[in-house]
Image (cartoon, rainbow, N blue to C red):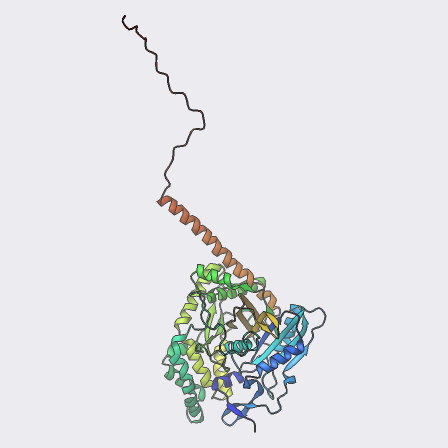
Length: 509
């Protein structure tokens, strides 16, 4: 008899968010330097991935909800595929292949994941990963990825907890920013049972009761009301109804050390710098299209890790969502960074992440139609989903081949057609972009602006530093002037005047 495990309400919510034009699937690319034995790579991936029982289980409807049930006919060949791209394939061809996979729903009759090994790619190989969001969130999947590597496979604890804050106090990632909201986070599970009972009762509809319970449990009516009744963001070509065809692109990575240096010099966080670059890239793209940018703001939904330290390898979804309004319409890079920092600081003081986590848990128990109606209110007021995940800061290998690049794309919910992903690995920051082809047919035109936007911030920071150094030197000179010394003449000095000779008298005889 197949073994089963009850699916958590939050995972159930994400499972039911699948749409034909927006599959709820996390897509990633792992580039490996050659030479690579594709068969050995497939064996390694299978052996190490199947240590997690979830990857041999399928999602099954049961009385009162969903369960993970062992697939008694599990066949690894239905999950790991070998492909070759035509001709002398490079990034453009790989991006096209990944976009096609991103638009293809997973088969729900088997476990919800696939690996495609792209053989003989740029002298090595590439692995295209597709995992349904119901299995795990981004932080958990980075933990899964680390367990596949030769360097960290089999270790209970990695050499470093990459979810921890940076050694630079201003270089924090999203992880750990919302630690003081434990009470709000924990209420999600308690709410689930109460919502279930209310949904089965008479009177007010399940959505109304879910809202009331979340407000009562969290004690922060204002946060929830602000989420559900916030104003729409600006209408731009990036916003509309997605048609289902996907496009992906990635940018040249940025040196993490330089990003940290700018953050330190500007007294802001690494996140502030990166989010400001995203806003600047969208500004430049809209300008390229001839679209007005003055006053334009787009809202991004950002997942926030709520796991406690040391639990990064546990599967499932344990994150909330915050809403960041990007000041796209601010042209000056430094003014834009200042405004992003101001808005990010306000988010850190809020309890949005805990409220949305509790809401997601509650929605896992109400009917899907109610879930879509309630969560759709939030999704309608946003343009993009953005994820910022810190990865390991050391080179890693799989099946003896070194990982040269890690890129991933978050799924978009509802009618959102834009996804921005930021991942740090081995001292570099990688930007990835996924778009609906109807909204943004050429994502490379957007992502091409990420590097130049950062370079502007770097240039202005260095310029300010040089000006401040000069001002400091001038001030120091004015406060402590150096003593003046008499210059020596370079001409031969005049001979001293001769004394006049006096008449000598003859001494008496």
